[in-house]
Image (tube, rainbow, N blue to C red; front, side):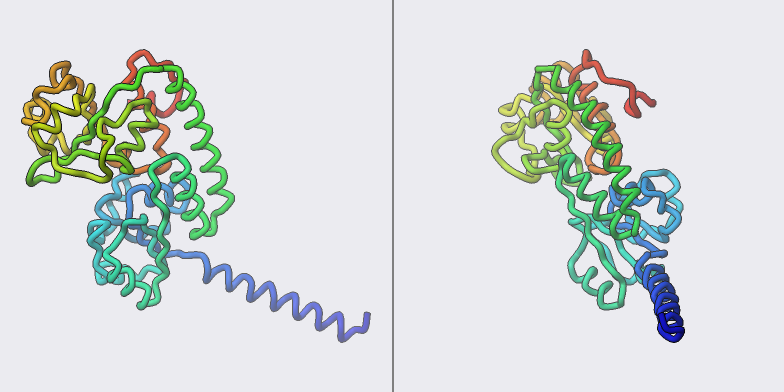
Length: 296
């Protein structure tokens, strides 16, 4: 090979490595705002928690994220608090908004990545893939996904052996007005099914207010709530005394299951744990393998 050709080849290789490194550095976000508790969990599970500079008000886990600046509620974001943190990326759950705020962020040069939020185990896997790709941590994403799917396979096998499918009614208090109940195609319906229960509501999607007549007609065996709802209603006794619940089989048997809201409904890395804990509450005799669901 002629000397000048070899020299030219070495120069081109050096330039390629240089600009390739620069491109990788630019593509890899270093200052991230996370909007959505499950997305925040995934960022940490992928080992990129040190890149977070802010989170939304639904991000509670792991506990250290509570020390980060709070940019507001997931569905009521404002561009200004986010931009004040000088992020180069916003990672958000699919229902983050309003759309105008996300448009303003993009117009300001911030990359906005939204993760799918389907309430089943395939949705969790897709969410992990999206976040891992955005962070440039695809290999870590594949490892995390494999770990979660393996855990879920263990829980699913145990749930399948229970047979019984108690009717479960998920009740949510927003602090004003009648409590809401979860219909089909909700996170509550998804986790109830994964845990071996049957959603008591089969004739509508999303959430609707609980009425006395509807509660009696639904006849749930179990009332499922977040701990926050129990606190807002003044305790389990007050919950079961609600006009829509007092005459139900669940109230008569005192069967209330209260769980952490993000764990129960987040559909993030801890979803197999959530399903296992709920399954144990619905099926006291279930034989689960050892796992994170055994921790207090």
